[in-house]
Length: 359
Image 1 (cartoon, rainbow, N blue to C red):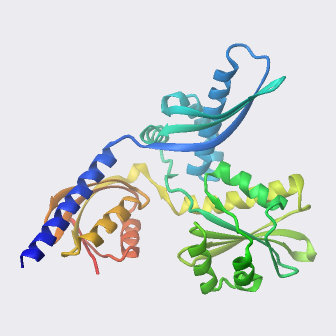
Image 2 (cartoon, rainbow, N blue to C red):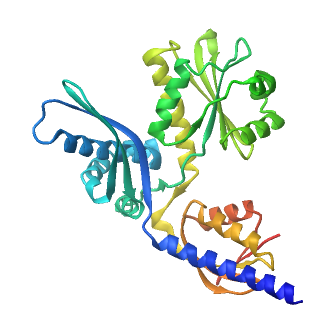
């Protein structure tokens, strides 16, 4: 009995630490990092060329950030607003870190990482009436290439297509894993299994590589045997979607345009399904019934903080068998309920508070 009480108290204290740590984390300033921005300044230039490069780096980093947060249709409709926001980059860029600097005869080339205030960026976007935006990063990608006509998997990482996707991943902000091209890959990866999204192969790939999504990109043909570029996106939950784009050549500008178009379409779909709506911000009270298994509760709370639209999560009351949480949420309640159910909770939506039960 004493051991049970000790374990219960130990677990309860762990929950207190987790929740209080979460409050501190929510309250603390967070940063959004845009890495590997390369800019060039033509020399000579009036003033300090390095300062000019840093200013250009901040603006390009902000452009990339908007590319990741705002779907293309909204960017096209709000060009004037985006241009106005660029003038305020200095108010939300917290610091710039120079990764490399190379001065040639007529150019200064600088690569920088730019850190933005997350809260500052959100406030900047929230000024735009009715603008919904994405704050959820696209999951890490394993890139596999193939040729649909020959039915072969291409492991050559020097291919132009590999290099194009690597370049785009840096702009779009998702991490990219490339196949090792070793004996294990050669034995386990087949084109037929990839195209059929064989569950065993998918599980093997995601356990072998640090990826939560798989892109199968292939050379193929469409109507009248016209060349096409195929991108088959397979997410970790098993859902998949195919995208196709005409291409006139397998290298150079035509290939660059085709893969950029496909990637933008993938990112648009991702952003549309992860949008937050600042105009719909409201508070919810969630009574979380976790029972004595507080380790499971810790994982659930961490998962709740990652749900798109959850701005803040803080405790109201804490008990040994259940906890009452305040959730600041941006969006429709139905989307939050769906996200909670997907994490294994049975949710009852009452007027005064929600009740979430762990299985």
